[in-house]
Image 1: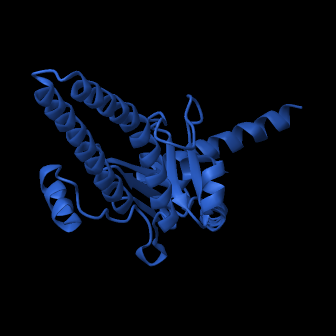
Image 2 (image 1 turned 180 degrees about the horizontal axis):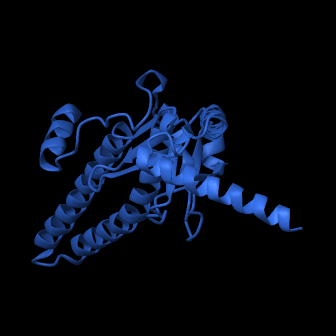
Length: 247
């Protein structure tokens, strides 16, 4: 049943296929996925939300049903049927949200190469972010009480211009900060952070890993330009010698 729902959502929502690795060496590509306990975490949040929304309606439905039955109202059965129908619709909507929670968990990707990382999340609104290691400014790990119980963490990567706003690590009220990438619900956050830091350090030590950037800026200069520079240097040397003779 769920497989049918997943296939239907992939077609209707036009969910893109699995993401390609970001720029970098293919041999260095590492793919991380959210931990199984992250799905349990999402289910707990769904259950809390569903309980808060369904419980009042259930109480109202049962109370009004008992009142209408005891009062022997002529249209009581019609009202009871209507209340039960609304309750059933609410339950079906909650089950639909649960299926979306499962699909959201499955469609979450974290990919790291030797030069950059790519994060994709969401099914209704798909958000994909690619971060070059040269732009990373801060890497932090956060963990709430429920996450500690489930042994999962959120890894936050801030890039140039990021770090502002009222973003939080838990739940779904996180602001859409275009300068922040999240590795949500991973169980090896320390290892992922160390991997990114090691590769970032390697890039800085090797001139950001770009062979063209490490070359001398005059390597590709034209012969005429080099000749002009030599002429300027010769005149500057002659001028310095002349000034030395005047002292």
